[in-house]
Length: 275
Length: 352
Image 1: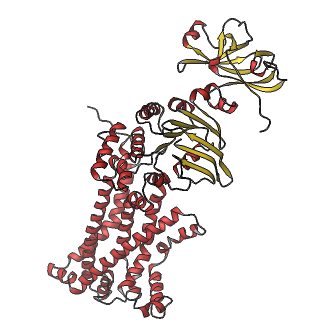
Image 2 (image 1 turned 90 degrees about the vertical axis):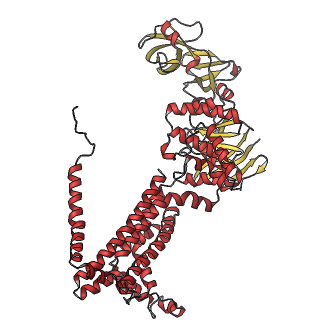
Image 3 (image 1 turned 30 degrees about the vertical axis):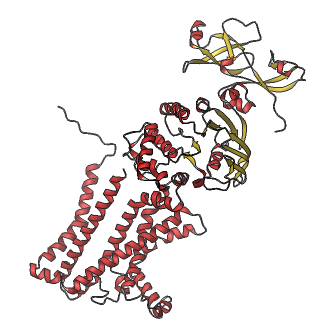
C-alpha cells in the first residue's frame, strides 16, 4: 500500500502550527509556569495560609461577584446597543458605532479616575445620587459600574455581526405565521444570538476578572468590602511577599480557568444543538 | 373572489413599484405573477401578505378589507425565495412554530406536523436541522410551515429561484400535484415563463408596475395582448415592416394578414414564434424567404435552427422536429426556404 502525502490547498500548516505553539509557549505557558513555580516555593501550609484567609475569601467572592454582575449588565446593554446600531438608521449612527470601541483604547486608569470623580459627593452625578443614598464611588457599585464600562465593547462587537446576518425575511416569516413582535424576538431572534451573547459574556467576564487599573481608583480598596483579588495581590507585592502574591494569583487563575471551561462547554453544547 | 386588489399604487422613494394595479385571484386556483425583475410582482405579493403597505388602493380578502391589517391577522402562508427557515429549530419545531405561537394543544400540534411532513414527503426528518437538508428539502419544510397555520391563501415568492434546474423541475410538478390535492388559493411569483405556464391556472404578466395581461396560460400564449407579452413568453422572430389593406409587408415580401383589411399603410412589427415557421429544401407555394443555416441546436424536443435570411439580412430562429431535421438533411451552411404558418402583427402604439 503506497502512502501519499495529502496535499492541502493552504500550504504552511507546519510552519504556522509551530509558530503558534512557540507563541503560546513563550507568551502564555512560560509566565504561567513561572507563576506556578513561585507559588510552589511555599510549603502546603504556607500556601493555604496565604490564599485562604477571611480577607482573601472576601476578595475572591467580590472579584467574581462584581465581574459576573458587570458581565450580565454588559450582555443586556450590549445586545440593546448592537440592536440599535444594526436595526435603525439614524443621524450619528456611525459616530456612535466608533465610540463603542473607546473603552478598548482608553487607559483603564483614566476610566477609573473619571468614574470616581463623577460619582463622589460633589461630582457631576454624585451631587444628585449621594443624597439619594446611591454611592457611585468607593463602593461595590462603583466597581460594577467601571467594569461594565470596560467590558461593553466585547458584547457589542460579538453580537453586531451575527445580528447583521439575520435576514429580515426570518422575521417576516414569523409574522406571517402569526407570531407577535415579542414572540418573534424571543423565539426567533434571541435564540439565533445565544452563541454570540455567550461569547460576549465570557469575554466581558474574563476581562473583568483581571481588571486592576480602573478598579483601584474607584473601589476605595477597603478590605472585606471593596478589595478585589488583583488589588490584594498588589498589596502583597508591596509587602515584598512575592510567593504569597503569586499563590493568590494561582487560585484566581484556577477558578477563572474552571469557570471559563464551563462557559465554553455551554457554548459548544449550544452550537451542537443547532447544527 | 378570495383575494382582490384594487388600484394599488406603491412607491419606494422616487421609484414606482406598482402603478394603479387591480387583480382578482380566483378561489382555489393557482395564479402566477410573471414578469422581469423590477416589474413589481414581488411587491404586489408582499402587499397581499401585509408585509408592505400600499400608498393607495385596497386589498380585499374574502370580501373583507384587509388593507390596514398586519400579516399576523391575515391568515396567509408565505414561502420565501431563500426559505427563511429558523436555523436554530428542528424541522419539527419550524413546522410547529405557527401553531405553538397560537398556543394550540401539544397533541394536536404533533399530529398536524406529522401529517404535513407526510404531505411534503419529509417524514422521518423531523429531528434534522435546516443546515442538514438540501435546498429542495428546505423549501418543502418552508411550505409545510406555511400550510401548518391553515392559511386562506398561500403566497410563494420565487419559491424555486434558489434551486438548481433539475430539483426545480421536480418541485414545480410536485407543487402542481399538491395544489390539485388541497385546492388552496395560491399566488406565486416567478420570472420564468416556463414555470408559470407549467404550474399556473392563471398567468398574470407584469411590467413596470403594471399588469400587461391576465388570463389562462393558453389565452396568454395564443393571444398575447401586446409585443411585450409576446416577447416575454419565449423566443420570437420580429420583423419590422408595414401593414396595409390585409397584407403585411416586410422588406420586399408580402404576407396575407386579413385582420387589417381596409387599413391604410402603417408601420408595424410582425412577430413569429420559432415553431410557427416552416422550413424546406424546395420553395413554398406561398410567400417565403431564402435563408442560410448558421447553427443547429438539437437540445430539447425540437431542434432549434438559427438562420440568416438572405433578402433581409436578418437572423431567424426556427424550431424543427428531429425527424424533419434528418429528413431534410439540414446542416450548417445549407440553403433552405422558410415560410410562416402563422404570424401576428402589432402596430406600435404612438400614445406611449
